[in-house]
Length: 117
Image (cartoon, rainbow, N blue to C red; front, side, top):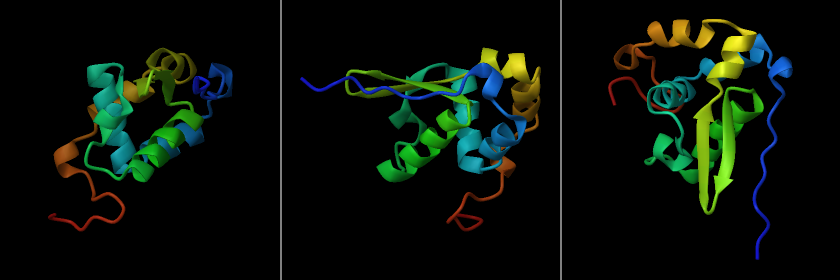
């Protein structure tokens, strides 16, 4: 029987504003955060069903390591949710403010994408 996967998350007090802003600065990660804010906890694969697994893993790992999301194993699934309460405790209103100003239809192209694709 395989051991359950465990994930390391920063403590709430250790979440740093520059790291959170870095996480939110990439359009793909910002869209993931928007979806998590709207939908709650989801299987991580739902955040990028058309992405290569390595790309999805990279971005979700970065979001976890920077304190933006909480990840847990559920069988073969990798469940992910926004750390909204923790982020609000550290930086009141930040996520709501960023998401209120985010328009996915007018976001710059993500790395490797050409405008208009």
